[in-house]
Length: 407
Image 1: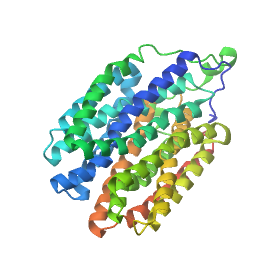
Image 2: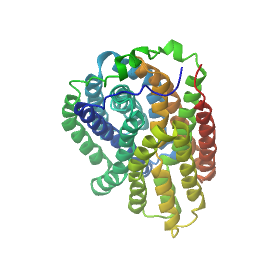
Image 3: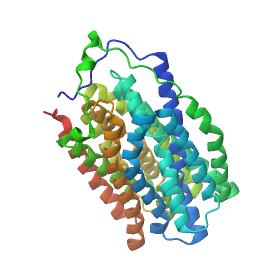
């Protein structure tokens, strides 16, 4: 089967564009709440006296739960639709944030963030929206998925400075209460956006779409491409989360002011917004693999800049690290996700993507916990950052192997 998607004759409707905007908004809200944990981590260390590894545990468990729950969420959206998944996700996030404001032990933080909020965020994420977006944008699939994926970067960029200001001004418990109130207000409007799903554009001659193979999970799991994608998701997440969760802690340890570091890294994360869209759109023209390799290369350069920082007067290197790493945060996602939709189209795409995404959750859990563990052993993030580069190289090799079409 050729790997390229079917080319439709008609452009997506106005309703399709509105649906993409709604998915972007919902994903931004969920992502910003989840990424704010990177700022809360230092507050937990100061308040409870936990080690970096202990403080990272909730985040690592969240990544494991995110991966483990992905097949469930993917199958759920295939059966009950986007609107109900968004409603469920918004309610879980609200409950998780509210409970976190009153947490006083490690297991409570692990359960509330790592389980309740993680499942809720999954219901406002790629697993729910990619099948919808891939169905209504075929010719522009890479572009549409990249716009959706950029919400993760946009939410990440907003979360660091906003959460740091809330924590600095009111304390971390009041910050959680504020976020819970905001989510409670937004949950119903977000779900209402998806009351009706637009029809996909008609294919040329009306026959091409009907001829496309409708993959099932059982069929997909027996292919080489499925497991290569699994490996790509896992290696990419390991490389990213060996760095991302501990960026602010790393900068503060070097001697940078916490608010300044959050601002620099948050500003760098804003670059991921155009970066993700650019690489995803580019993948429609130069291929998914070439676009992903470009993003891997820039991420590696960003990590190298962090390795070169040794004192708090090296502001340029911090900015280069923040901008280089931030520019490509999630930038491989559109190419990888669009490639998955190219290879395994059909009504079970959500389920297939959910199982493959286990690799992403597993890699993120390994990376985020390992960085904290390595710091506790060596009092440095240097080894973690070097391992990040190794993981990125492994992911790029695996993704390049997907350039050959499936038989």
